[in-house]
Length: 203
Image (cartoon, rainbow, N blue to C red):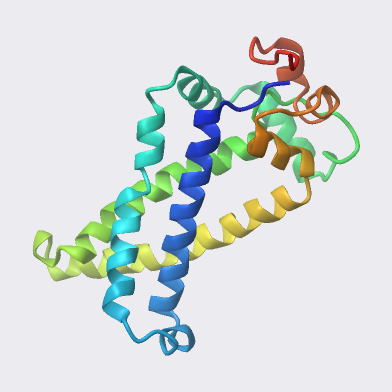
């Protein structure tokens, strides 16, 4: 079954690379033990700043593709079956049995929503820290506080995302090749497997 188009896979890959560079350079800038390993701190700052500015661009470019817009619509809708999925997940009942989920389950929708909001907040606070003349000192101090702690939260969630992907080779194959097995779709995303017009068998 076709799960992701080429455009969607490249958006994911490009965003992942930019996010990885942003988090890695942030760690070298923030942690003294890592900062001591790098002599060219100004270069790291520049890479971090420009990576942050570029981070929203893959998704913005992807809006030109119908499949991307359709999946954004799916991610933006939270229905009764998503509440049932979350209830099952909180009770650790999502393993070994089908639970109601469309193309994206409730956990993926919440992760996508948080990431989108966090990137915008990081962009705004980063600009205040970069262009110091844009705001008074108290605003810049608050922006630095929010930027640092939100970066930590993003790092934790990204590591969790990678850990979840590492546990599901079929999901990784779907993002790598665009195709998944019908059995996996029926088990993990039964509503999508039954109803989605995108769930076409592989030719």
